[in-house]
Image (cartoon, rainbow, N blue to C red; front, top):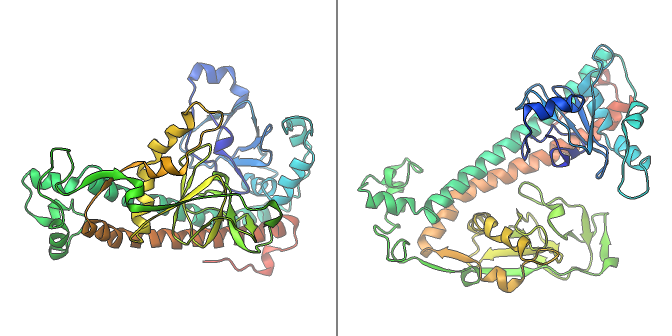
Amino acid sequence: MVRGSNLSLGPGLLKDTDFVFVDEAFAQKLSRSLCSANDIIFTKKGTLGQTGFVPSSARYKRYLLSSNQMKLTVNEQIADPKFVYYFVSSQSSIDKIIRDAEATGVPKTNVAYLKSFPIFLPPIDEQRSISSLLSSLDDKIELNRRMNETLEAMAQAIFRDWFVDFGPTRRKLDGATDPVTIMGGLVQDAERAQALADLFPAALGDDGLPEGWRTGELGDGFDTVMGQSPPGTSYNGDGIGLPFFQGRRDFGFRFPQNRVYCTSPSRIAEDNWTLISVRAPVGDVNRSRQRCCIGRGVGAILHRQSLPTLTYYTMLELKPLLARFDGDGTVFGSINQKQVKSLPVVLATAGIIQQFEILVSPLDELIRTKSDEVETLASTRDLLLPKLMSGEIRLGEGVEVAA
């Protein structure tokens, strides 16, 4: 079932995760709400302007719309579905949908409005050329995003093997003597693997931790800064001052989006600190990529030995624990600085945490590079989109696309 969380403001394929499911019999009762490849999905109640395109490569052959969504099926003899999708997901179309929405209560629109929505259609061959160009940019964006997800999963697996499952120590206990095997094949160079393997204890203590390690609190090894709202008069959207993050609304896959800036910051997080949402919903994790201002909904954390990569994956591991603060009985879930500092963590020896940073930080740097590329590609697409849709730029005039 497609819900608002599967759609996006602006161009983007259907977010093929976080679904709920219904059985076949129920789906057939709502057959008019079924959609498949090349259908365009719109939000009709709530966050208007959200759209999603069902690609032929989608994970499932059919989807069922939630009650807050509606679909458009394009007559492919007249129009290219992907071109239409780019047209209706452009900023000017989003602005029009929001501007024309029913103003009372929750913003809403309807199918009748969608049917009457004006659209500019050049010859179909030109439509296909335009959608092909824009799709090539989106394909590169999607490839980078998937690579980033893979890289993060690899780094998180290393963290869990070392600091959650105590893999190297357990493999020693199981009788492994080859250093490459002890390190789980992570490092193929025998000399490098041996240097790493020697850092890990060969036995577990009575507490179940590798000998010499201990359980402590986050505040034992990490500095924390809790956000505070700056004066409202210091906000702006013109890029003046520091980027300002008030809560998880600004968070992305890895880095927050710069939407609002602040000229009088109250609390500051430096570049490469880990950011967490501390007000409902609690526990989302991001990472700063420049000096920034943080509001009441955000906390910033960094290991005292300036180990940003270790910090980030430590907080990712703590996400399920942080999420419990959403259900603490209050109207709005939250976590304060004392509670953040008291979160339980495993404290390994200095040599091991430093080697984790050395080994994994290149993966994080690659994620940062790929994220920067995504922003550049998205900016290029968003610059071209309205000009191509309006006919201001024709493809025959030549268009340079970022590699």
